[in-house]
Image (cartoon, rainbow, N blue to C red; front, top):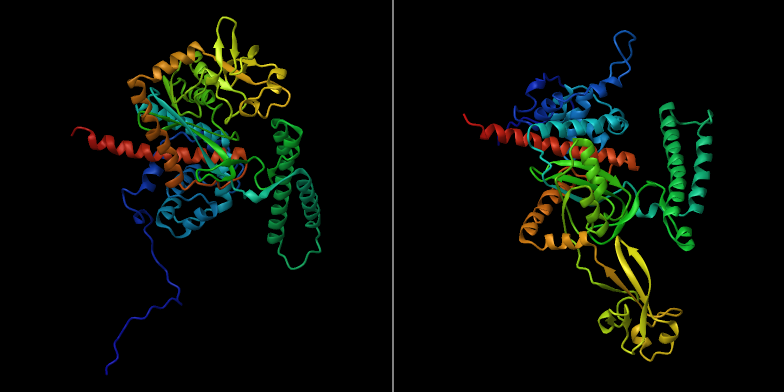
Amino acid sequence: MNERLIRRINREQMCWRAVDVERLIGEEHPARAIWELVGKLDLGRFYERIESNAEEGGRPANDPRLLISLWVYAYSQGIGSAREVGRRCEWEPAFQWLTGCEEVNYHTLADFRVEQREELDELFTQVLGLLSAEGWIKLEQVMQDGTKIKAQASGRSFRREDRIREHLERARRQVAEMGDPQAEGESNRVRAARKRARRERQERLERALQELEKLRTEKQGKRAKDRAQVSVSDAEARRMRQADGGFAPSYNVQISADGAQGLIVGVQVVQERNDSQQLLPAVERITARLGNKPRQMMADGDYTNCNNVEAMVAAEVDYLGSLRPSGAERDMTGSGRFPNGLFTYDAEDDQYICPQGKRLRYQEQEKRKGVSYRRYEARFADCRDCPLKPQCCPQNRSRGRGILRAEPSPVVEAFRQKMATAEAQTQYRRRARTVEFCHAWIKSKLGIRQFHVRGLIKVQMEMLWACLTYNLQHWIRLRKLRTVLAPA
């Protein structure tokens, strides 16, 4: 039987190949559009940081236009690791086209991402200005929303002060021992890398102690302060509830999206677990970046409280939000007790009368979460011997039953009436599909479900990169759409 002739694969050979770099990617490839768009931006502040020059010499620096384009394209492909970007530059056509088949060290990429904070912030503002000049940003309606993104830390990395100090002392000893010139079996490069890693760990532990003191000042009560813990991996992260109901070290990412095209006009990373204090700062950031404040802001119930409603009126910004129903009276004893409806209000004497005929007299005025309350309380002697105490206020051991009566704010009442209209509800329904889409895109398309860097300042910069990428991607889409729709 004749043997079939087959061309065998030989992978044990070296070969030379001519590469036409310009033809590595097609004319419509996204990398080309990103390179072109970045080239139209003013990158002067990035170039000013380059120290080498023709007169004094020095090693030529990587072009900031290249590094910006690499990071924007990498994030657009869901890549956030500097090492991975460096590897892609060696073999992936789009990255090779951007670099011209030249090597880019991953250390250079990693440093560039986090070391030029002011320049990146100015670049983000510049892009917003150009988008606004082209009419894509109008600030007629701006939607605000927050999301929790996991930190580069494990939930098991949280420690109390005594354990942190123990680890810190050990880290200091290890750093000192690394200076031993008699160490054998290690090259200078490996020794330097080990020393750098241990020094960074020591610095993280020192930051953890500083953050622990900060956290203690925020907590109330001696027991809470004694139990305070921080992560030794990322001290500035906080335990936050995730969408699945669990808790993880995270940061709270605040995004403001313009209602015209869904472009991001504001971003901030905060440590606070809730959004109640983030509305007015968001308006101030937008005003500072674009020179104009939004005509209308929209946010969900996490932002909508009496303080924020009044602040938006004072700032002359129309506000639409989901305000939870409020009762005129608030039970001070918790659920499962006699409801407030069983108490009769005597308007003439400004007192409440309980089911046993005892009176709850006015005590003082309180303000909770921006709402003013009048507090009424029964005498402890009246409640102590009352046969209905087990059903009314069983946990009160030294005070009588209390009730808080809200004093309605005219501003809040006007807001409630506005939100009850069909027009306000129709406008408010646009909020979710605009700003929540931004969060979904950043997590799903850009791959930022967990930060790739540590520390509040660095994660803020990573979010700036992500939002810059998001806006540039949609700017490219809008430019193509305008070209298609333009009359022949």
